[in-house]
Length: 469
Ligand SMILES: Cc1ncc(COP(=O)(O)O)c(C=O)c1O
Image (cartoon, rainbow, N blue to C red; front, side, top):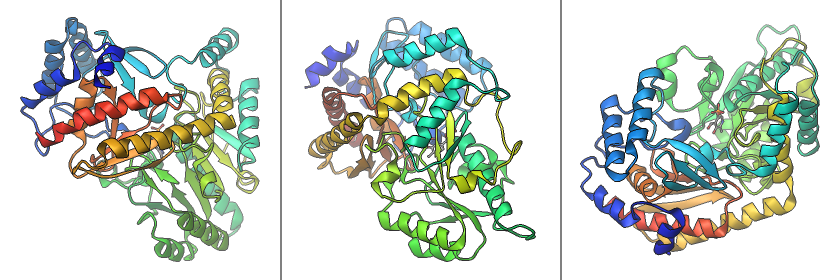
């Protein structure tokens, strides 16, 4: 298979050559990684400018037109705020599951812009919807009604537990809205009380976003501490600790429990049915709301339209974002009628959210993903990929576990995943890390073929040797 890797990816430098060059790489695990590795939302591995420049020099060595890459990286460093430890490649275009950089190098995309491009790059129906809508009406604000927003909301309501939808522009904003809705719900459920339940529960390894409320719900202190004080009243419990959760919910202080049915950034950990069911029962007893954050695991990624369908446990609120508009910015908060009835005019809003353009794109994405045959194909390909990975890599001493559901798969290592991720990239495969940086996160476009998954598994097998160097 490795010869086909070169053929298919038109890689100017063979994987083995790349691996050889990497052997002389001076930076190793536990020292400062030379290449910033894509960590998705956990991306805090901010390289100093000199390191990034050194990275771009490596690119220069390996590619003829490397000047273009360096030029853009240098410009970026001058004019953008340095929040991202970007990988030193400049992507220019994509088609299906392939991406191309400005040097003409081809990559197989197993990260989908951090679990966003569910239909891959340039899906023709999605493209057509955007072009036609842009030609008709792009933005009107939420002062007016518009047909695509209502059409998308109708579909979301028809295909979920929810009765109503509120649109946002991102995952963090969806969680921010869910926080406000939960507090408003508790205020109106406890009229006249001075201290209605206003606290929240979130869990170890969770990620809910970067804005002040969602950040307060995000477990990793590293993200929160520099920005304190964040929203008070968040209690972090162990993901899966039923007793601790039930006890705290029964205290009567909890407005809502935020939980990812499958944790993405945290390292691809799936909840158990018992855990989610216990949360549901305790919330019902205490009057707390159960919020499922399906920003990463929802919308077909787990082989179910909603990941929670696997557990047959239903929330009061669900937040969505990443794949919903196939790469355009969107978020959504799906709520039951009793939650919606606590929300009044003016309680929340957004200038951009739910625009005709974005909602037209999202309608195409939702319609395609909702097809039973599409969801079945995600399950089948996910199983096949997990089997392949287990067969190819499962016996490698560095591989501790291969886990996940559908096409959200994690390969946990006993060391940092960064050298492997870097080697894969140099061999034409884009993957992410997760967890504490020790998990390779595989979240390909949901349209990926079995052949492409085989190629990815081959590259991973080829590259894992780097962990022994
Ligand atoms: C589960 C979950 N919630 C919320 C977010 C935040 O989404 P966004 O980056 O669109 O704000 C993310 C991002 O990775 C996520 O994985």
